[in-house]
Image (cartoon, rainbow, N blue to C red; front, side, top):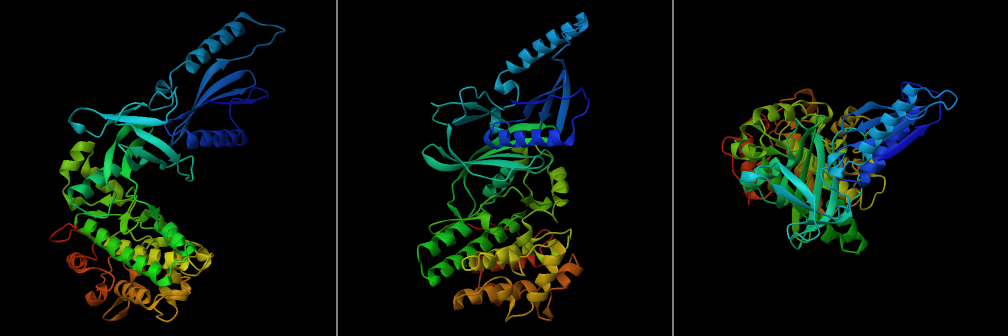
Length: 476
């Protein structure tokens, strides 16, 4: 518990400076105590003491009482008030962790957790600390992540589960948003490949002040794409080897994204950090921003997670224009187009591949024209202006050196995503939110395998892949 005090006259409000200092303490506590459901703070000011509770969305203040009285004229009321305050403090400070501020009892530490589901394997679960259970998740390393006072946040641990290296993800997100575990269940039910295997998942807190706490025990899929390529570069691998790996990544990720879309699921946050590589295995990770579309037909999944599928779809659609990493967003989304489809994810993959190869030789990638984020719309206009120039677009995206094979793949992606039989379509992507792309399928085969191209053709029967493909299929 955080303790704070101000030796000042009695003032009923908390000034911004004091609140900011307390918030810094709260962030520090939450960063290193992943079992927290809220952070309590005892704040003494003048003669009074208050209890402040910080959740993922708001902070609350309750007056406990008077903690001091004047020794010059100690009235009976003041003495009784202090006595009652002391009793209240004793009650608060002797509560067990699972009763006050944690989702389980962590008095003996939280080095390993066991998750238990109720009947019928519903998503709701409880957690306990155990050092002996064969079903325990043994925590090894907390991965550093930026933490903010408001909004969604995840603690991510490298861990061990039943002898396997896994990732434990404890995620806070708004209670009306789609559970990430439900997305993974949907991917598994539709047989989509190149996504992490899920060993366990569930909800530890269904709603606390508008937020839900979810857990996932996932396959450890290796290094992120940018880390993997940088490691190859540091090991003095030939450029041909590095570029061949990137071409493999483009093909596998394309297959995963198109296969997921044909099953009614769109990732919405393709970035260098959300593609993992482990040897020859390529995996699309972190589906926390994904959306399951209305036409996916996933009643079996919604029953386990006890969610209103239509309501969730409606809420998730409101995030279409903002979900994702801005520097990898499509031109249309940077211009705040409301509709989102498969081509937005494929366009993000194009930018990811450019960024990945460019960063091998350029340490200032965020300052090159194609990635400099002054504002979303400014970045979108910059991309529209450079992608029409075949001879200079690579330089504008920080790519100073590229082999023939990878250059051919980049050019095929550029023409498929930004050209039609009538010419360059850059301006149409932000002027018309229902703009229909007409890719060259022969060029698409330069960076996709044949089954992926055929599934993408199915999506072409709709408005740029915004609605239901006519015949959903799965990718193995």
